Image 1 (tube, one colour):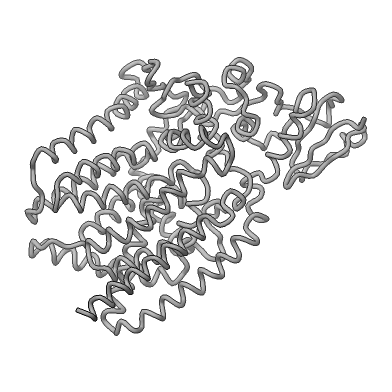
Image 2 (cartoon, one colour; image 1 turned 135 degrees about the vertical axis):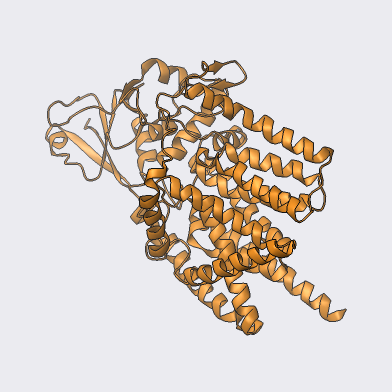
Length: 516
């Protein structure tokens, strides 16, 4: 009894230590690293602000189930989760990143609880530890890309589904989480029902599912949550007209990306995801630090071993009709992998696959160590800790310098300073309009009345101008001596300097105005 008590105490201590480290690295200098803002999180944040303050988004839709945004749409869940934080703290970059970091932090705890329930506490701690320290999940948690909510809500859905096998009321929560996941990332729409179907089929096969009122309610909950998105598909495939009401809108997009999934692209997509996995990068600084990769190189070894073990033990469990955690993990991997085969992916597009890889890598660590001796767990743990410390130092000291262009560091201060002056504000065309909308907090009616779009209609609509802002100009042919210019630091500003403008540096940008 005493020995068992020590084991429980050690488990609690390890859980607290891992959780503390995971939370700390996700919150330390939160909002400053990465500095600036990404164009997608800026758009999601502005739409949240607009819906909160004016009751409609930048295209005039009230409570849209899917945002028009760029013209080809944007997932809406992140925007709605931002609204309470904006209501309390205002429209700031760190504020709109709160939903992502909160979901990521809860994901650490739920990862432990899920793997402990499916296997044991050691598996739970290993899984949580890997998720806490790998670059992919740390970087994902610190900025507000809307599709990066998907891994968290899929994880929550799976956890409550597994709990529902013992107590069916949890199926209702599982349905709610899976329903919310549909609003986090449109690409997973075909795969969520597939994964649920496979999970339910396995549960029925091993006789671990009860069909009672809670099961019926969970089906209704998921159906009700999916219904607006089914209507959205009908609207955007031309079967019904768009729906506009004061409490919900289902917009007709300017461009519907329904043809992104293609069976003919499977060979190319397979090579692409294999390349991303092996090289541990997709080339996007917002997703990956190439020096450290997605999960660190060591994870590939454990993943390969874990995948073999998972497939073998899944087959064994199915043959013997035993309840096992392995089939549930394999189902997550299958769903994420199929998605990666049908679309051209990068790390964030394949985010549902990434969390399955973490689970399977944890299985690899667990089974290898269990086969040798549990005392050797110190070796992979030490390697992961060393890489994590090195990555954290790099991320918090050098990353902003490298990612400055991607997040437009300095633009916020430049826009704030420019808005203190009279006259038109001219901004580099490379600065996409959502960032300017976000930093200026332009009233949505003023934006809608003044905006001049380019590439309209299209998949990625831009703007030439709106409000006081102009993004379609050439300082080599015409200069507005009464205007203010915000240009990226690589621009040749000689024409402006020759016209009497002086410059002030803000991160990656220069603010130029006429000398008094």
